[in-house]
Every structure is written in C-alpha cells, then in structure tokens.
Length: 217
Image (cartoon, rainbow, N blue to C red; front, side):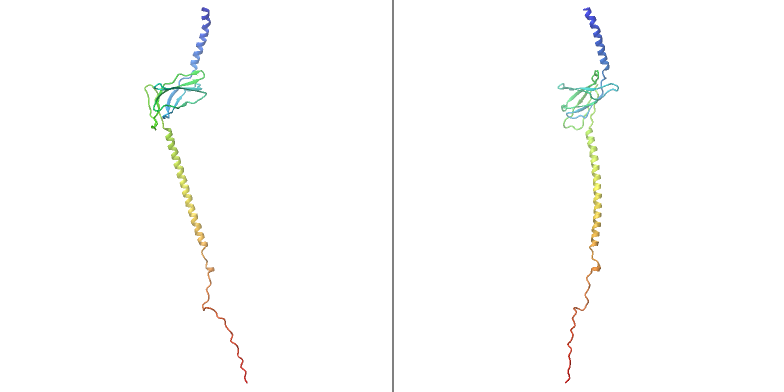
C-alpha cells in the first residue's frame, strides 16, 4: 500500500496543478447584464466582458421563478454579447444568469437578473427590480423608429407635391400662350375682303339703231 501511495502521489499533485491552472485561465464572469426589449413572449439579454480575456462563446441559464421551466443556452465560436430569449410565457417572472466560455473552461455565473414579461395588451415595457439584483430597463425603440420613418415619408410627400404644383403652373402658362398665338393666326386680314360692286345697278348693252336710206324720186 505504501508503494501504491507513493506512485499515486505525483499523479495527484500533477492533476491538482492542472486543475489550478485551468481555474486560473478561466475568464471572469460577465458584467452589466441587462434585459431590454421586453415583450409578451420574448426579451433580449446583453452583457459586457472585461477587456484582455479571450472569450469564445457564452452560456445562459434561463428559468422561471416558479420553477416550472428551465432552459440552458450555449453557443461557442462567437463574439456576440447579446441573445434573444424566445418562447417566453406571458406575464411571467424569469431569472437569468450568464457565463463566459473561454479556451480553458467557463467562468462563474453572473449575478442573477430578474425580469417579468409583458401582457399582450401592454405596449410599454415595465421595469422591475429585486434587492441584490441588477435593475433592468425596457426601451420602446421600435416606436421611436416608426416615428422617424413617418416624418421622413411626410417630408418626401410634401416635396413631391410642391414639384407637381410647380409643373402644373408652368403647363398652364404654356397652354395659354399657345391658345393666344392660334387666335392671332386665324384672324382675317383686310387684303382679302370682298370688292364692292359699282353703283348703278345692272349694265345694259347698247343696241345700234338701223340706218334709214331716203330715196328721192
């Protein structure tokens, strides 16, 4: 037994050293974990990674606060710092934690973040926070984008209306000028007026009276 223990001791020491190195090379936990764009059945979680650490992916633990459903999302070979959570229950409380995946393992889980999905009738996201957790904020960015698009469309329509009005005005001016020129061309001139007949009525032809020859006896 003494010999076996002597042989296993170096192996255990090497294994313990490797384990310590792996733990030392693990990336730190993500920071600034927030939940935005809250809807009835989806939400977006985002986070930051401290600079200088090699991160090749992330892992997200998602679970309902009542414990009815739990989901684990893992993705590698990506530099994304955000993830969309789908198929959420309406008007339900959730808890999420994020881990960074490095070359030698995963980081410790981040602080727990609580959020609540909206109802179908809700339009604006509501904020919720618990003591000791990070406060999340919901922003209605879609509505702001739609308002900007409407302003641009109205401006373009007004510009086109001004151009069309200017074109119609120029067309009316050209049409009036053409009609005036045509009237002047069709006006009769005095040179082609009908000559007047001389007064005196009809001319009668003159007849020569027959000559009479008188013969003396």
